[in-house]
Image (cartoon, rainbow, N blue to C red; front, side):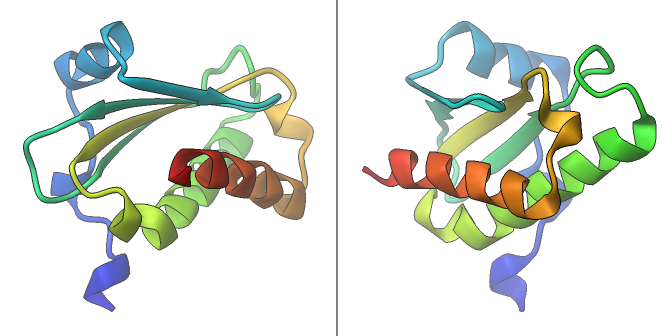
Amino acid sequence: MALFSFTREQRLCHSFEFQSVMKEPRHRFSNDFFLFLLKPNTLEMARLGLIVSKKNVKLSVRRNWVKRQCRESFRAQQQNMKGWDLVILSKKGIGQLTASQLQHSLEGLWKKLAR
């Protein structure tokens, strides 16, 4: 079970960590609902930062749901991403997706990233 954990060390918690990835991303992947920004780190693990703005998803319950779905998807993929910092930004329209549509959208970006 430890392989799929999501500890505090695997999170981007500070604004300077987010800014580092957002200012100089090595890779960018996007679709209609998400933008992935990646930058290499010096750690043996991947780290995740999420930005789901109130502008794109009005209800806090729905924003938290989107974040949970993204974290769950990241947990399943983190072994393939060692040594990267990833920031996931949401786009307009994400609040109206169903769980299966959201997962399908994330899976498409994970496949792009794997190539």
